[in-house]
Image (tube, rainbow, N blue to C red; front, side, top):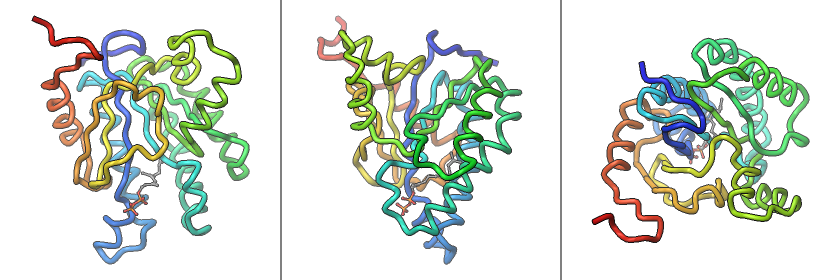
Length: 228
Ligand code: FPP
């Protein structure tokens, strides 16, 4: 089994997990059923990622603008996040995954910040995959907060924003939408973008592998010229 360490070889993949609601309503189910199915996709993708050469995964679970959704859906998502962290931390730790949550914590419901801290502590020794989950996250707000500590170089700014994950190599958005929605705007400066039609609850390791195959065929020049 291939082992990857944050900071060593391996890719940072960011995922905008879109389409849960449409997946559910298309089946005559409540939108919440789509979010529940989306958690299964997260499990599949995390299991597959390290062997596909991914060392860091950043998942967009709840944006700072998602508070605008109906209160019942927001409450359901918050409960789902807490349950995921409480139920999954031990399994993630056993499989060498280090979990880190990015975003604001001061507006989260009671119990969730504690569940986040406990899951981060339980998985702190993981070196096989860095799994970052963005909750109440806004890239613009994160950039403003990092800039307040006056970084003196691009590298310092990247360190403040991304830590061990570093710049994003590949950003994937599911379910056909083609936008960034205030996600990792600094870290995606040179990310390759992939927009796939698959709704998030149908996304799995094979779908991630297909995105990575396409990514590896691309010519990344970072503003330079193609190698002779
Ligand atoms: C976007 O689909 C999805 C979300 C806003 C929530 C993502 C949450 C999960 C996948 C589950 C919880 C996460 C974790 C980490 C346990 P949408 O609701 O916007 O779908 P739509 O565009 O079809 O309406």
